[in-house]
Image (cartoon, rainbow, N blue to C red; front, side):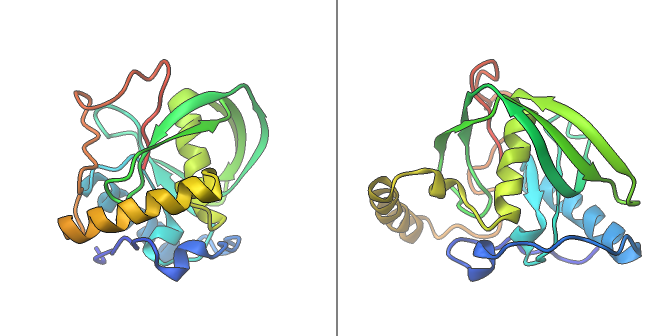
Length: 192
């Protein structure tokens, strides 16, 4: 396994738009496997390729309580959405920061798997919010971009102070997604 490093804000690559994947080869399969391993290691629920410095349109996620149901979505595209839900989210690229964001409650996603096969699937609640979060990453968007300019400026000042005090390394860093730490998922979701 290649040692993957999760990029942290304000790394410039987190703001870049990922490009469509056209080659479904062994390198892609290995990268996806490495990302799943890394996601489990840091106890995240999702990890986008852009978060490890790969500007390609794919992400992995697993919101199961046992963390044994990984899903990989290549070239994901939301083709329909409905409803709204408040989603309490954190991000492996902004460790220690938690925000409540309004997301679509249900989405229909078109994507390809690791072998290039096409899928269309409907997701709702936590899984829908997680997918929207990861697609934001592929579009160079972070959870802080869902705030107004004023709120974002204030929050980032506090965040920089907190970061200076904690000196967080490349670990879970408060991203405890064990199920005794989760929120009520009838109303909230908690993603990475």
